[in-house]
Length: 324
Image (cartoon, rainbow, N blue to C red):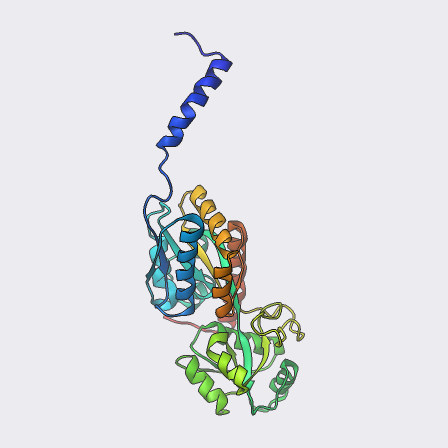
């Protein structure tokens, strides 16, 4: 057999390349499942459906949202972690089920940093610190002074143990070196009702449930918990601006896939989702939810989640918060 010269070898490789390319299956060949670990109708569900719409528009992909709620978002993400790593299952992660739950639950069905490939951050939504119109506090500084000097611990309402509102109240108490009595309720509506009635003193709320009450003047917004002011509440200072350095408590969302998903598919998703985040439709949908788009590289997302796990895990442990 005549040995191949370098020139002939190069020509043979060039001729073979199209055949090899044709042998690689196109991605995607079928619809992609987007697991939403929360019930239909909520903010995360709405964002997931907009993600599906944007992927169809910018990439031509069919993405089908599938709600798998339960256990604070753990059930849905566990389904993602255990899915076949072929690029046809992706999941909506957020602060709760990626960063908080590993410290909050005694037993977790997945290891966040081991069992997922991180695709990209999607969006950031602040909490808003609100008090009743009838309260004497008009700034965060005034509220902080009252918390420090109160004879009895002041009361912070929150919609459930381990929620970001709960952890933010604990964080504020720690930063002020003062006791804060955190009062759990079943849902945001119950907290707001008691805040208006004067039964609790303040509340770190997600913005949508209290927007109308802020606009009507029934509630007074003292600060948002992002580093900068929210475009949806431009008149409200941030906690950082008010003098609370690095006081950040953000409801963020991002996309994850099973850990062994081929890196090329993860990279393709990263490219397409970041294109989708730049579209006017996606920006408007996020704006309606008081969120801002926040794409990232896969590695940036992974590092961000690790930092959030460390931060909120410390608050959970110091406050001795635990769920089943």
